[in-house]
Each structure stands twice: as structure tokens, then as C-alpha cells.
Length: 359
Ligand SMILES: CCCCC/C=C/CC(=O)SCCNC(=O)CCNC(=O)[C@H](O)C(C)(C)COP(=O)(O)OP(=O)(O)OC[C@H]1O[C@@H](n2cnc3c(N)ncnc32)[C@H](O)[C@@H]1OP(=O)(O)O
Image 1: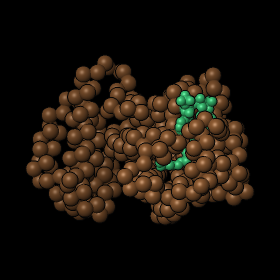
Image 2 (image 1 turned 180 degrees about the vertical axis):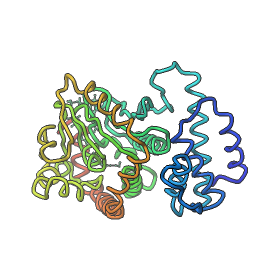
Image 3 (image 1 turned 120 degrees about the vertical axis):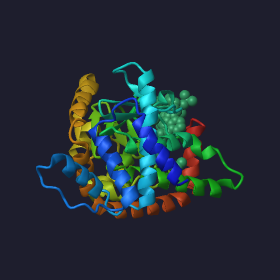
């Protein structure tokens, strides 16, 4: 539902009642959205370089380009509402403690030091991604894209980063039958991958252990990937009667060259962390014993870099690819919709679920 004029005015009043100063970055964002919602695209002459405050305001407003007034109004209302709820929860929480933002069944999401951390939390299932977990990851990423953190990190709880799609997802057949299930799954998968393609701030994967299937393919859509030397990278699509998703049919050949991508995506070769790093899928590998300490020290330093600059740099780096990635995603999902109905895929899934096979 779109925000009404009343919602907008209520939000303006709520800003005055915030218990915690939201900081200059957020204040500038609020200012820009307010101006865009009330006056449209930036119409002020550009202030001189030494007029720091007005220049910062002008930059923030001008960065919104031709964003429609209604969208700016909605974004303003959403931003104020996220600030109001976070200022309430932080005033109740312990100072300095990790602030949990929202209850999820399969994730732990916290924000601290300018970093929102989204942790897969189904360790007894090796963080396999259930249908509900796909939805939760999309919600968490959308919330992180609007919160005041500078970077977003995805990681796993336990020994696995994630064992990929929960193969039991395909056992929950709706009244429309398996064709309907395949159709619904393709729609959900497309939305899921689109959320990664469109994610606006630096998105970092902290790969704490083995990664399988969709948890590997989506890494090609992250901005940096740090891995423990215990991590492995496995896309056994042919073994499962499947085909690539997560835009890997495009990103992997681009990252590692078509010959190496073939070994992973068609022959299901499992890579060690060092091999994945040599092939450009992983940014850097750390010994498992010091992994968490080294990675988080580094991420905390990165999170202090100027927020707008990082966002804009990401936009510049990714802009040219976005349309292509959305098209690749649509094509991969449409191919998979048919693959899920194939004997090859159904047999492989049944073999796993009846405990006759493992990777
Ligand atoms: C729905 C729309 C979107 C679709 C998008 C498509 C994506 C494609 C993919 O992601 S393909 C990859 C799919 N993943 C797999 O094939 C992995 C299957 N799992 C395994 O082979 C093994 O479990 C293992 C190698 C990951 C780990 O083996 P290990 O022996 O160390 O541990 P267990 O097998 O005992 O695992 C503990 C319990 O967790 C269950 N489990 C693990 N992974 C999955 C999974 N992906 N799906 C469902 N269940 C999983 C496992 O069965 C154990 O359960 P149990 O304790 O009840 O036996």
C-alpha cells in the first residue's frame, strides 16, 4: 500500500520524537526524501565546494534523480518507521550489545558497528534453505537495504555456510499438483535472486564452512566473499538433474572463464576455498582458527568508510550488468521450472530424501 499524505505528515512528526539522534547520514537521507516528496527532483543551484552543509544537502537530494514524489514519500515513511522501531528497541536493549532487529525462525539478524549481519540459522539441517527461509532472507535483505548500516554480511551458524536448497521443499505439493509447485518455486526463486541483484549496498559473504548449490551460485552476486579454509564450494546440478540458478550461468564463466565454470556447473566439481579464491569466486581465504577474528576486524574497518560513497561506487560498478542479470535470472528460472518436473530431478530428490544418496 502506498503512503498517504497523512502517513507522510505523521512520519514528519515522529522524526521530532526520535529518542536517539539518527546521525548525519540518515538526517541527510530524510532531508533528501522530504524535498523530493514535496518538490520533486532537485531544483536548487549547486552550492560552492566550501559551503559544506548545503553541498551535502544538495548532493543527497540530487542523488535521488527523478525518483517519483510518491516513491520518495513512501521511502520517507518507511525510513522513519524503521528509525522509530530501532530507537525503541535500542532504548530497551543493553548498550553496546548486538541489537537483534526482528524475529525470524531461520535467521539471526543483528546490527552493530554499521554492519547488519544476516546469519543462516538451521545448523542441524546444515542451513539448508527451506521455503520459509527463502522468504525470510528476502525480508532481511530488504530491511538491511533500508537500515542505517553501511554494509551487510551474510554468514552461516554452525559448521556449514549452507547446504543449499532444502530438498524437502519439493515434497510440499499444492492442490494444483507438481506443475503448480514448479511454477510457484520458479516465481519465488526469481524474486529471491532479484533481491540479491538489486541489493544497493556492499554485500559481503562470510563463508564459514561448506557451501552447496544456491548458496554458492548467489556468491557471484556478492561484492566480496571471505572464506574459511574449511569452506568448500559445490554446485552438483547435474547430479541432481538440475541446471544453474542464481545467475551463475552468466557470472561464473565471467568470473572464472567458461572452462572452469563448466567443471563446476556441469560436472559438479567441488572446489576448496583456495581453489575458489584462485578462480576469483572468493576474495580471500583465512585459516579457520583465526577466520572470525580477522574477517570481523576487517569488516568493522570497512564499515566506517563513507556510506554514500560506497553505495554509489557499487551502483557504478553494477549498473551496466543489472539488466543482463535480471534477464539471466528469468531465463534460468524458466529452465528450472521444467527441470524440476524431469525424471532425472525427481529421482535424485527421492534418492536423497529416502536416504539412499548424499553428495
Ligand atoms: C524451491 C525453489 C528454489 C530452488 C533453488 C535451487 C537450488 C539448487 C540447489 O541448491 S542444489 C543443492 C541441494 N543440496 C543438496 O543436494 C545437499 C544435500 N545434502 C547432503 O548431501 C548432505 O546432507 C551434506 C553433504 C550437505 C551434509 O552431509 P553430512 O553427513 O555432514 O550431514 P547430514 O546429511 O547428516 O545432514 C544433517 C541433516 O540435515 C539434512 N540436510 C542437509 N542438507 C539438506 C538439504 N539440502 N536438504 C534437505 N535436508 C538436508 C540431512 O538430511 C540430515 O537430516 P537427518 O538428520 O534427518 O538425517
